[in-house]
Amino acid sequence: MIEVTFLSGGGRTVTAPENTNLLRLSIREKGGIPFKCGGGICGTCRCRIEQGIENTDAIKPKERKHLTEAQFAEGWRMACQTFVLRGKVSVSWPPRPAATTARTEVQA
Image (cartoon, rainbow, N blue to C red; front, side, top):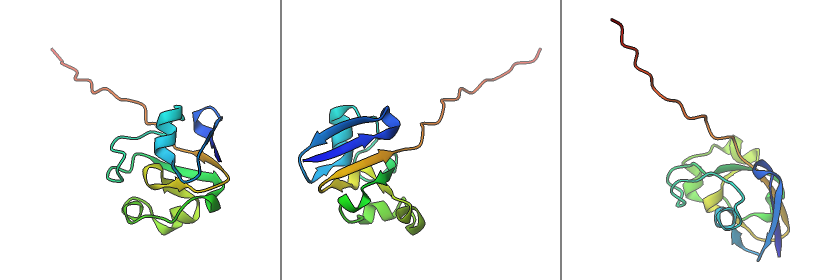
């Protein structure tokens, strides 16, 4: 079994079978990792493996389109492309930007 802690999602820790996709686990267990496409196209599920990066699989080509080598070195991955193979992993992600509304001012 693996153990994943969703640090930005309130610190919730869940367990799952080995070789589990990080985004699918987050969706199933309400971990909170943001996502849109789930297929490596949009880059929305960018997250940082804070602990346990050695327990994840190899970086995928789709991740290389959204992240730099420097970001990989800092532990950044795309949750939709990352599988947790064994052990414990802690993951965080940037907060979602606040929604802004456009205002049109009409002058008389």
